[in-house]
Length: 275
Image (spheres, rainbow, N blue to C red):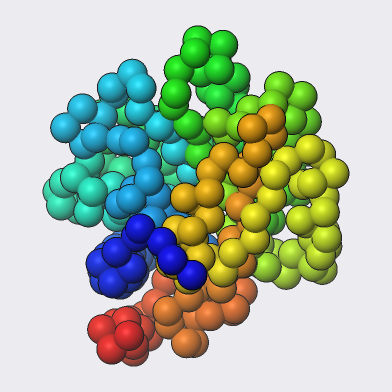
């Protein structure tokens, strides 16, 4: 598999991102470390290789848009934006504090690179489809990326947006589904089974690619292939592991909400430093 990505560099950035997420969650006693770890490589590849965004001019008109629809994993977005230069170290220090700078779900602030408030899940794709539709109508080249959780696909509004995007042939719209197989209350297969997810998206008229969401070469190759079709919207099904990077957090529902105690933090940082 060949790609123009510097896989080694992106891998090192991904390790840094996971360590920063762990530090912030441990310090603030915040939840959602599992779903934050599962989407790291996808966001790193997008922000450090593919997105047309500029921290020196965050509101430039022709920028690509990225919507973090699975807003509970906002710490991945924040730490990536910090590494990319949109946010400062002081911004991160204000995370999850009364009167601080960053909330536990994204709050729209384009000057910080945050394109949409996603306090409630299930709405990001509808807004993204609207942005992509407007860009098409205005003849603009910008693309719109929407990061969804697989559990989030239970929301009916998602499928209204899926149909709208297909009807209007929005090939400038890219959904990335973080398929980690879990949601807040259990395994997705036990709540609403997504076993035939690829066929489902295809049946709605989308062009589909499936990748290992932690394999940067696969992720980059997929992104380099966009658009997958000239007359269809695009979806990347990223197969991931909830809690990826820390063995005792991986595929454990407990770590959707839980923050590590001191002993767990020490064990986790040791694993991440040795990765």
